[in-house]
Length: 435
Image (cartoon, rainbow, N blue to C red):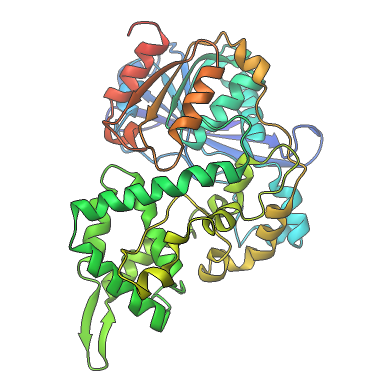
C-alpha cells in the first residue's frame, strides 16, 4: 500500500491510498492490479481512533463519489467513522478497464478471461485485503448502494468475519434468480414509471412521439458520435428511476427541435444532453458487466434484457408510432444494440457477446450462511424501485437472518443521495437496534 500526504477540503481531511492486489485472488502470486481508495475523516477527528466504514458504489463499473467537503451522506458518516471511498477494480482511479486499455490483454477472448475477475466476489476479496492493511484486522462497517448492496450481500455470504455492520441502500439482489427473471419483473416497472411521467407531464406524450418519429426517419449521429436510434431514445427512461429524473426528462424533451433552412432538426443542445445521458464512455464496465452480476447456475445471460423485451410488445416503438399509443421508455437494461450505437462500446462488441454467452459463473451467495447471519444489518428497500425489484429484495431480506428493513416510497433509488443524512441515520439506528 502507498498513501499520499493528507490534504484538506472544507471540514475534511483526505488521504489517497493505492493497493497492489492480485488480479485473480486464487493466484496470489500472479498478475497484480492497482486499486485506489480515498480516505476521508472529519477535520476535528483527524487524529482520532475512529472505526472504519467502506463505501461500495452502485454500478457495476462506477467509481466512488467525488465529494467536496461533507456533501450528501458523507457528512453524517464522518460523525462516527473514518470513511474509505473505494473505486472498485476497473473503475475510477483503479486500474481502468475500457476500450483503450482492454486491448492490452489481447483479443476478445483474453479480455473476457480478464473481466471474469471483476464481479462482486473479487471486489469483496479486495476489500478484505485492504481491510487488513488499514484496520489491523478489526472488522469494519460496509455501506453498499445499489450494486454496492449486491457486493455487501456477497460480503455477508463470503467473509462476515470482516464486518462489524452492513448497511444496504437499494441493493438487495435476487439470490437465485436468472437475469431473465430480473427483466421480466423490470419491464412492467418501466411501463409504470413511463405512465407516471406522462401523468405528470401530459404534454410530453406528443413531444416524445414527434422526436421518436424524427429519429426513426433520420437516425441521426449525435455531436459526440453516438448513433441515435428510437430504441436508444427510449432508453432515456433510465432517468425515471431517480427522484428528479422525470423532471429532467421533461426539460430534455421540451425544446428538442429548432428551425433550420432544411426544416426542423434536433437542436445541438438536445443532442448534447442526449449524448451525455446515453454514452457510457466514462463507465463502459456498466455495459460489459451488467448482466454478469446475475450470472450463476450454469446459464448464460444471452442478452437477457433484449430477449425478454420481446415478451412485452407494448415497448415496440414501431407499434406505438404506427398507432396512437404513447411511446414507452426503458431503463436499467443493457441491450446489444448499444454496442453498435455508442462509439465507446463499439470496439468491445465481440467481448460483450462472449460475456453474454458465458455459463461458468461461480455462485455469488451462500444461502445457508446468510440464514445463519450474525452481522448487524439493515437495508433500505425503495417501493417500486425501477432498478432493483422490490419483491426480489424482500425475498432476499427474509433470507438473511437478523436483517432489518426500511421499506419506503418517500425516495426513489437515489434515496441515499436525496435523503442524506436522514436515510443513513435511519439505517444505522436500525442496524444498532435503536429504531
